[in-house]
Length: 268
Image 1 (cartoon, rainbow, N blue to C red):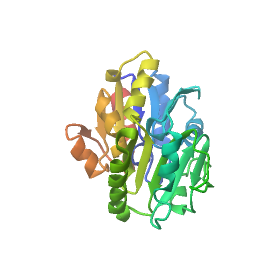
Image 2 (cartoon, rainbow, N blue to C red):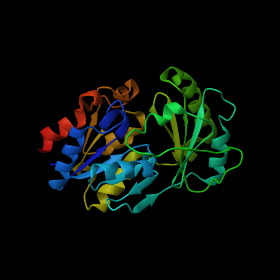
Image 3 (cartoon, rainbow, N blue to C red):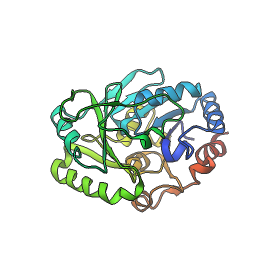
Image 4 (tube, rainbow, N blue to C red):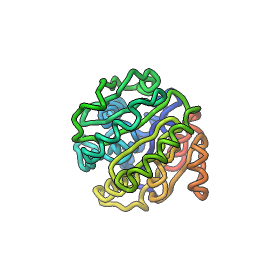
């Protein structure tokens, strides 16, 4: 039986309105009572996820910024890998003149953005975490977990694909680049992923990757789903993820609280 449950948030554990349903909270609390460890594994900022965890009244590990930060169940930082300052400076300027793209930076406890983006704020229903404005030409480049680029809708995905191709050619393996959704392209330090972070979590618990089950819906979940003892893909997952991992089980949609229903059947 699995001892660790790791789940992505948006498109997976959260509802389409980007909130946790009462049923999800009930199931996760029941898992902890059975000594099943829960891990939030997300591209979100650790401050945002910490607020969400407090609202749920459970102790849980947090893999945030796609693995660039890991906090234990007591809120202590146990792993951190930042983008090198010189690379962060360059990455922040990549799309500075692109009218379709918003540039975001997770630095320390702050979320920075180069221009107003009401679409991104719609993802923060259960917390009061919000952004501050910054100048990509003049800002501190230390302690940066990730830099990411968003558009106002999925229809601009081909535009972000071109940006990814440009970044891949320019930076190679100096950074980790992935899509968390069709309209969100994320950049972390080299070798950062939810999978490598999950390995650190299970080892800290005195367990192994085979003792974990993971859930996800985006390309930023590939490593985690591949390394876990069992990986489950959401029905509403990206076509790219399903093609990349064709042998994994596809469960229901986040519309129907598929993850907590699956966990309830498995453990409760």
